[in-house]
Image (cartoon, rainbow, N blue to C red; front, side, top):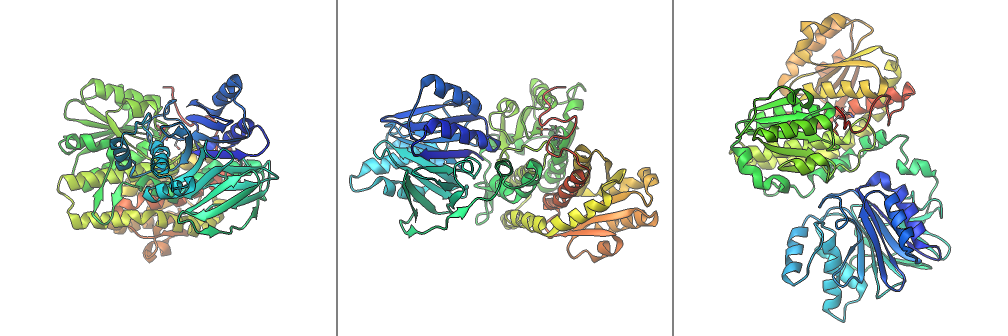
Length: 613
Ligand code: AGP
């Protein structure tokens, strides 16, 4: 997820663009840049935060009244100067900033390269600038607007775009498909941004572009049309929220925003990787090592915290779907255990930040002993992602809240795709089964959306009852045992309530002594093949007056009748259930923490990335 800004008017464009990018840094902050038209195309861009850009703009005294800017969350190509936006066409007369993912950029890049165009970056965005120029200069009958429209029709994927061209130095061209973009209407000036936060201090009049639409903007006017050149009249909205609230898109905390982003972040993680029609999965980042994975004696997963929990889900996934033995290790324990790992083994490290010291050390230990090391990371260009032999990015976008939510579900989605692909490659999943799995996986974002809409109120009501409970117990079986651990961790780290996650059957071997009428017990009963056993566990808790909160499949009346509170979720395959059962647990911990007045986004004693031992 990146941030885009644009400005045309009478102010100093550099000032407006930099200020706007600072407001959008929560969307991505690994590199930033601007292109300003002042008789020539002046581009200033580079790795690092917007403050670095601001200094270089001042030092180079780049002035002008029209320009575009970008703060990056890398998806293709690591964060460095050449991959930062804006990207230029070969002539240097066209500049583009882009938020989104071009799925067919490889084929488009190949075609443009065959036509003699040279590329400088590893990004998908650069092909947009090059393709527009290829079409625009290819015929003197095509206007620049038409060249943009023809380009967008060849693109598969998502985009929020702002484009400038030295041939039309008073105009900015914008287009949207899948990534937000809006236009702020001022007095003899116009503002463009990915959301309202860079605009709200100048004007409260905005036009929201919708998918498949573009606009041509100058200081005094704008024209909105479809990419099929059909003119549109768009409603002008009045912004009515504060600046601070906007950076959280109207949510009170980043954590709640990120919980509610999950339908989108899961869809982004799946985008371009699953093909329902053919029943195939494409994971470009590990394509070259698939044979090693197929022939691996075992997979050792190493991670910390929430990422360790997603690794535990991965164990069930790989063993069930691909019949590959898996061991899951705390990275901190693995690195000091003189581990038995070497040639023929595959280590898979999982890390949202890609900077966790223990996980990095475990990676280096395994590599030094001859194992192949793969990674699942959310931050492109992070240390772990650069030191692994290959890997898959989660594309969840920046996760600002310290308590991990959308990164967890994105990690589980990647593990699911890897396990399915491995199962297909090893012949354990046939074409018909593959299509069925992929069809259900593609339905997960909508099911998550249903849960968020359906259980938000009930979790708020439950939170009120349990805000001051001294302890919680979370129980789950099979795929949902790791979810019990994750639910307990979420509650611990943001509400400071002591909570334990356990395999449900294990409760009988000690923890049951804790249960009385003061103990809320969250039971995750959404795994069909263990449902009868879960019912017995619930009966055991009930017999000792435990207060039962159950997360269950909607038709599970047996569990519902035994529960004091129950949240029902849409049914899905057992192997996909963690993606759904974790959602109510994220919300429950969030609302309890808010009721307790805790600092939800920055809980005491914690850091977003633990880069120390
Ligand atoms: C999860 O909510 C915590 N913030 C923490 O356990 C985190 O998952 C752990 O520190 C690992 O971080 P990583 O995924 O960035 O490696």
